[in-house]
Image (cartoon, rainbow, N blue to C red; front, side, top):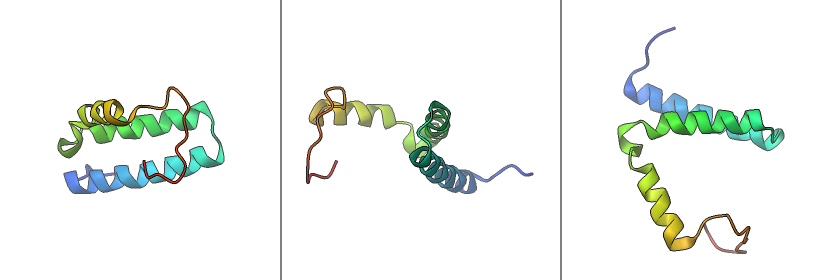
Length: 77
């Protein structure tokens, strides 16, 4: 065990996010979704991601969210 440098911590969180997404894809349980949220919350605390909520809300205003369950075919999200 050791304390990670900022760069290593970011890299490990990104790896963990990928792992958790795969696990959620295989088993879409609430526990797996909670793991994804936990990792994303940790990432949001990193200096380069502190404005994530602002960006998310701006994107939601511009393109809408997922509340209406509309699926756009052939468009990049």
